[in-house]
Length: 379
Image 1 (cartoon, helix red, strand yellow):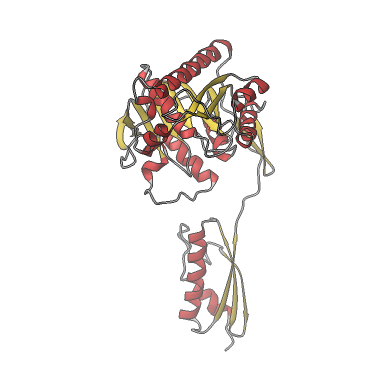
Image 2: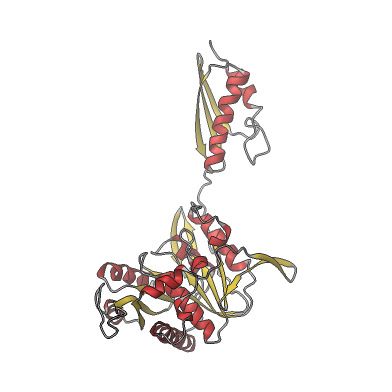
């Protein structure tokens, strides 16, 4: 059977593209139709790259032709996503100061598995124990663990009125206000998002939340140096950054890169210092012995080498892991070596923040300038 192009076009007039409000012919989505006997090739151009919309368009075209023209038609659909020409843009997103928040501390690590979230959680509760007003933003979009460490993984933020606006009310436990993408997903649900979508979610948790008055907001960043880090520093004026590492060379090499990211002229976020986690192991039955499983004082030597403060060391202790797993950070335990270690670490962080605020001007959020499709970071 020979198919006619006019019949194909009439069939395509019965289909609307999701979000367009017009049929495929009116919207201009159909760019070309070619017929060869019982074979049809339809070229579409869509304005959205969403996979489910592309798949739906393909299925709708095949179904319309086979239902309305010829049941056994062999249909091939080629889909192209319309991309607007790159235009020079300046100050795509400007950093905003959140009223009531005095200091914003980013906690980063060059690689995963060094205990960054554990350190952040214990740093937060120790600050709260010292009498500070503390917030914790879990910015690890793809691996949020803070809700588990604070025993609030089943909680869901409520909406509250702040003036004439509705905002998210952070979940609070142990004196720390918390927001995490983990509150909005199921425990077994993977977050499969591209950078812009993750950045939008983070901006909502930052600016559409009722944080109130805070002395410190801690931001638990994902491992590495990537898109989320830029989005955070683009959105907020970060007071300073803390980098967590273990003593081994593999972790130290990545920690060095993490420090270098913050120190770039185009970013220029003050590095408050380096924390060495899993510094040594002391068996309970041999309290005077120290075993340097991952190497000795590697992070301390790195701090000296790159001339940034060394904030302290946290030993490798089973109870720290157990406390995080049951949702009660180990620093909450009283009269223990762990509590003492986190208190010393926290005092050093506070001291560096005070020194930074006395000697350096406020940090500006970085600005991204896009030119001809290439991104360059500008101050």
